[in-house]
Amino acid sequence: MTTKFLDKEEVYSVAMPKDTDLSWYRWAGNQKLLFSVSSLKNYSGQRAGNTEFRQTELYVIDIATRKTRYLGLKKAGPDGDNVIHVDRDGRFLLLSARQSVYKYPEIFRIDMDTNESELVLKEQLKVWDWIADNDGVVRVGISYRGKTVHVFYRSQDNQKFRRIGKIKANDDEEEQEQSLFDITHIISGSDSGYILSNKETGRFALYKFNFLTKEIGEKIFDHSRNDIISYSLDDDGKVLESVRYTDSRDRIKWFNPQLAKQQARLNRALPGDEVWITSKTRDNSKMIIYSTSSTDPGSYYLYEPKAKRMDRFAGINDRLDPQQLSKVSYESYTARDGTPIPSYLTVPKGKEAKNLPLIVMPHGGPFGIRDTMDYNIDVQFLANRGYAVLQPNFRGSGSYGEDYYKLGEGQIGRRMQDDLDDGVEWLVKRGLVDPARVCLVGSSYGGYAALWGVTRNPEKYRCAASFAGVTDWNKQLRYDRRFLSSRYSRKWKEQIRGEDNFDLDDVSPVRLVDQLKRPVLLVHGKKDSNVPYSQFTLYKQKLEDRNSDAVFVTYEDEGHGLSDKKNRQDWLNQLEKFLAKHNPA
Image (tube, rainbow, N blue to C red):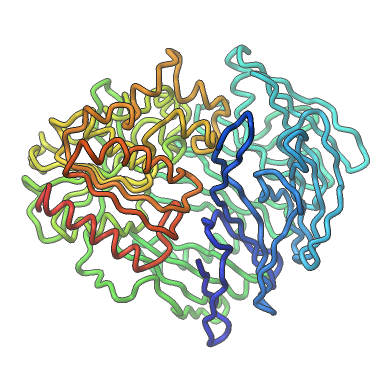
């Protein structure tokens, strides 16, 4: 894997570690870029047998020298990228890490130039998560003990931590709501800050918060239907700058008057697009702007507010003709139990919205994730080939509040799947799609939903294409519980199995492979560290002698997505060929 950088007039590439997936990246000062990668590892032990697990590691790119270095402990546990603070000048970072599987996380100060590490906070209080303020002082620790969560706090570096909260699984409703905080920013030199809570309406909103008294203060911002996703402070980490949320599309609300003014100007300059200030100088004299829409892969601009000048310097894919792309609409239908299901519908351009072939494309996740109005390569490709595409934000999807999220608990393969089926019925009743020409296509959880759909309801779907899909839920959850983590709950077993604790084998495609009578396209990257390749091989072994219409594709050097453009093209070619045979447009 390589990443390209623009240095004046020269574009250069930086090699990523072999056999890894890129997890995240961020700036550390002006001359360093941090990035995290994950990889698939195996642990062989007498007790564990041959067990797969997900390893994360941290690296830094020095922009001046163009060199890449590993950052972290020489011997560390599987989580090697848990950064809780980055020095604004890029000199050091604080890393939460375990020195062995028998220890709780400790905090290390890592020099970003030399990788020298210094232990600054030993393990204590059985804390798993640590949170630092904007000056790098560790202020909050969160401990999970059985079904009880303990929150510890201190005001200053030289103080001991004291417990300020204890939440049990059987606490009353009010205390349960108090547990649903997103503590992400703590302001140095103060016991006051901001917090996201859904205690008032069931939707996350931004409030002032006092950590000593545990009192939620004034509500700063909320949305009438959707969660506030995140908030940010200024470059010094002390003044509230913005909040982000998603309704029909991603949006930002600026509290900084100067940036709010510039955002309004940018919106007028690029009407109809999502316009984002992605990077800026400390004095706001220069900004990097990114714009995109459902029919625009994206453009980058250099914006100089005082000069009132904005120059486009890069595009994601300038060879695409926007006139050939299909518009996406945000709509809603009603599931069989009366639940409204928000969704995105794409109708192929130039086609009459009548009796069309349909592709149902469920998103990944599934919990706390949702589709948005962003440009989607697969959606536009399928629409260009003549298919209508439905992207349902089924129950359990993110940003619609706690009630909607909890409707998905214990409903994988059940009511979450009903929501997809009901979307098909909605379009059939409108006369928009042909009920005899419907297929499922998805990635990750969406890949699972595609396989499960044709297994469970072959009368509704002619075929399914699954990229990196889960086929055995019990194996997946043993591998990595974080696959299904969300802001609402860490009780992942209860979240997945629900109150009736149903058997996940009952909704795992590999366990019911004899039931499958429809063609499937099964695709997976061999280096996938999110959904391990064994999910593919296990299903393939059981299916290849039973289903002559099954197609199996492996990408040797890919992970949970496709980074090589040749592989991306091959995936689309494979998908087009498969659909042309089993669900022609």
